[in-house]
Image (cartoon, rainbow, N blue to C red; front, top):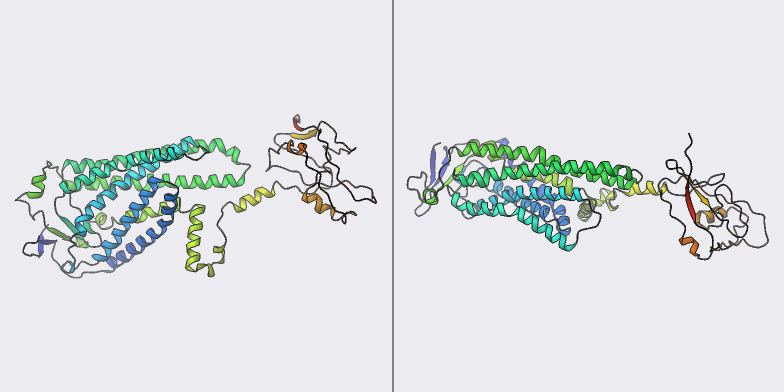
Length: 486
């Protein structure tokens, strides 16, 4: 392709452009692309701040590094688009200094991006396989972070070491895309920049598949235990949805994009050349010379290079859906909106976000004791257990049905006594007894079908009713199995 000299200065490298500099220098699509990428990059960085803060506080090393890399790439996307907005190359800033450092930042971020995804998916597959209940100790957390660092940083460090030796031209500048690294077509670029990133992407996808099948096995074994606890069931469903989102994000957009970029880079390289640092940087036959800068207008650039900045912008979507939809993250967003003043528009922002509130209320109401008109009975439909007493309670109390609980003072009993002839007398609770600590806990708190307690009528007396203390030698309640009816 023909190169046209734009600027030729004494003791300064020449600047060339691909193709002549002819109007029009702007178009509707170019302006829309500029506004869209800048606006979306700003929104993506703002949305990722809350997950970044929460992940850093929770000690999630790999996820924190990933979000920092995305923030940095989005900042460069905004800066490059604002500096080189149109195709008027004669008005462009050459980018001295900034474009000299940008290849190192870009290659380091690109390498850390894929290795962080690998570390995250490996850690996620391990956590799903272990499913431990207790939190990690400080020593275990440090060991995990060390392993993640050994996964994340070796490849980017190798890429940074090869950035300068493999640079075939000082740099190139394109419309909206800004600075661009120009590598030489040698085997180190093919091995460490093209094939290595593809291999890491494939391994991350394999870990995603392992995580998916492991979580399915765990879900099958715990679904019966979570069926009686609606709040725990809903939390499990949210975790499953977020986990599936990460798996889908790795398998659907990330892996195909990595394969596509690998194919494009291999096609662009052409025939491989031997790696020779002196020949790359100081070849007298190189045209244009190594220190030259090449300008590329938008209409002469390919679609992938022009819109490469959208990859980091779109990555913010699964990060927000996976890390930004938790309870703590939503309350952080709510606090920010309240600070800005949106509470006057949406009054519900003053209420703390709790996705388990309704489920907890429903689960708690299922275990309350309500009134019934006849005798009280404790039964379980599925297990056919019933509560029986093997010793009578002192003071000559009658046992109706299973047992009489008229001597147990509860808030509901106090409320029911208000309508009795003795509502004007004070109700004295029974003294503390060791028998109360020996009363077994209901093993099915969310399947209690007891509908209430009705006090047995008592003849009027001139003395206020006193609840006698329970016998300290009363026997325990035990569960006996009822034979199934056929």
